[in-house]
Image 1 (cartoon, rainbow, N blue to C red):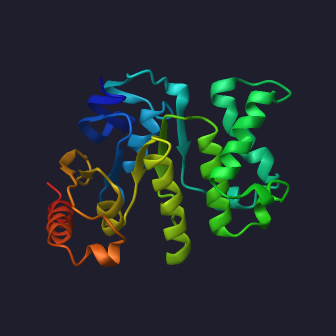
Image 2: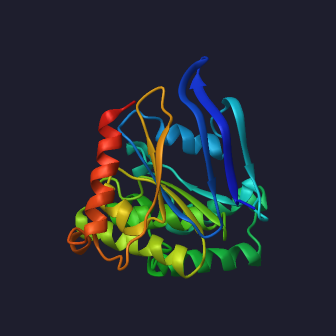
Length: 252
């Protein structure tokens, strides 16, 4: 049984449809990237999956033992959030609220989850630091750690390397890949980087422009997945790269 299913999903604002008749399934352990032009509704789709945006019609349902409150979500960060005056520890711990509820003190289980998340993101030494004093890359690790506190099963990541330089982006992608390959956490990630998506994902969902629909879903089959620079030398990489860009550019 699929871990997550979107069936005949239509989404919009004030009855104006942004995404129309969206259908796809996600299985446990998948690494899925969602790509499309700006304004195609990628972030809106992700918000709908976790219940932050109402749907006009259709269904989103979970399976394979997954509950909605066990889905970790890392949205794009706003300028105001970057200046948030809280400690790293406080921000990461806040990720436990979705599955553990609101209460004045954190218990031992939640503290263990905090320790695990900090270790996975390699930010234990930053625990007492003020969030707004961190670099962009460090802040993104903190936000991913917070999302990780919500789940051991599925992460939804909206442009997790947005605004980061190439070297820091690679470090972030490596952390995400480790969560998927070693911890078997399902990843659904929005990205504008087609090369990275081909390098990392098992499947890539391509959205058209508004009203958006699923143009195509590619199952990525490459013999030796490496970094995007080396992948460009492979015949399979160029095939997927050209096909995906063509689908995005057609917009029908």
